[in-house]
Image (cartoon, rainbow, N blue to C red; front, side):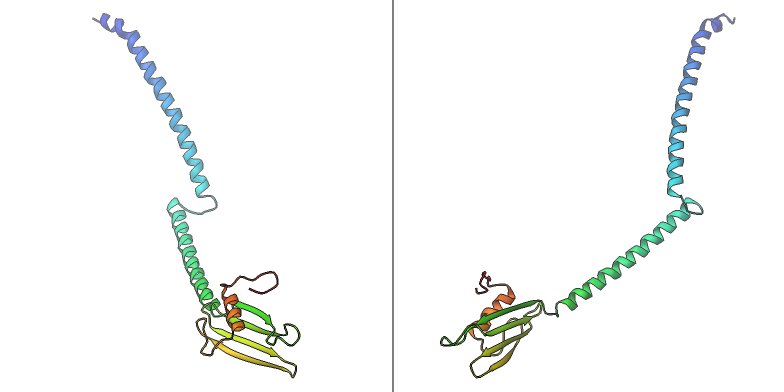
Length: 170
């Protein structure tokens, strides 16, 4: 009656042994994965008190604080950029000789303008009798007063539309 059991016992033993070996291999693999996960968890929570939830909540608080600081920095940069547009950014000096019968280039035009082209043209006219200084306001790269050729050239240089050569003339 137990003879059939005796005949399949070696097969059952072999199958049981294979199942046991497979279970051992799976257990070793799972143990290594658990060890890796444990190390990652320890690294994630290093220096933190409490559970993973508390660590993640603390991290999210840090992220929110960083976003708030980044927003403030961006707003500050925008304000500085707007303020910077009103400062003198474009300037040029053009020396010239208004009279062909006198000495060198003693007269000059100084163009000063902000980002929008608002500013002034300062013209110093040198003669034998003295020097006279004139100023003309600029609004949007133009003036309500008629510009001389030298003033127009200095304004173009300040705006960046006229190339300057090595001798300082366009």
